[in-house]
Image (cartoon, rainbow, N blue to C red):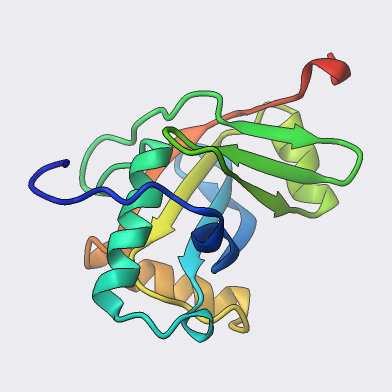
Amino acid sequence: MTAGRLVIVPSAELLASVSVWFWIDDTPAGHVAFLYIAHRPEQSDESPRVIEARMRGLAVALGLDEPTKPLPDIGPRLVVHRDDLAAVLLLDRSQHALRVPTNPEWFRFVVGGGAVIVAVGLDALSADVSLAAADQHIVTKVEASRVLVGKTVARSPKRYL
């Protein structure tokens, strides 16, 4: 239990039911890479309350916190794989990890040491929405404290060092 809530450990089924958007943005702190993770509504007949509980479990496994608090450093939990331009998010208390295919621009920025903001939305978002629509969704959800966030940097597997 955490803060009076049951914490759901992320399962393979949960990780298969999320979509991830990634981009690089210019912020007051400079350029930052973003990963936004949301549950796909079309993948589930679960209620919004169950989806929220599952996504909170994912956020706990990533060490994320409320956007109104100081941005937590969630440690080196993003592993990049040069062979296929993929990033893997490592989760606490779970035997599973979240693999995220990326693009060359995002990948180069992250491999070059760029900061990454990881955000988990508590509400479902269709995988078919454009990045612009996802951006508007994120802004609305951050304002409503329906997103949990943290920062990390990428690391490469030992074979690349």
